[in-house]
Length: 229
Image (cartoon, rainbow, N blue to C red; front, side, top):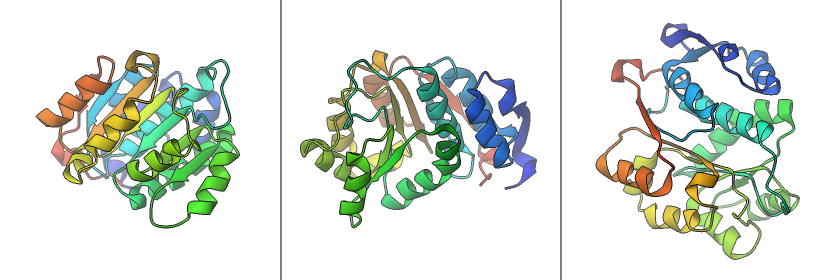
């Protein structure tokens, strides 16, 4: 992590939940990268964001911080069931899903928010064991998520936060129909906070944001600032 690409803005400058601040400080995160400094003023208010940011900008911590803050400051929906996660983070590959899960561990440990993974390939029984015990956040790939929804292990009716990471890669890999299938099973866009991140805010990505989000604010990180791990 190079300090060169940090801004003067600190996480403590935002009205984040104290447990979120505590987790960040324990990991040595004090100053924000540019994408974090652009994202948090929007998401702390519960507004939607579509951000142009590549891997290495600190975008993962931006949406994780936003997600945990939202869940800690908004009650679960009334009649919330064990198979109903409150947040869904979609990634194009299992490797990225696992990385996001790993990055989120310090926040989960500090806040008590429970997480589960859903990706194809292996780990089916282990994933189900965690999910069936009830989780607040599911991080996964679209194909396995759809499997679990169809089988009744996951119900998306109580989703309050959605993150779509690397949206352009989702298109490139042919997952856009899966994404729309999952969105159709969630509450209306106005009833949840939505975050989308993509290396490019192309026409097709903006179209997806328009379809599935609630009047998102668009932010972009300049290319020369896209090199923070």
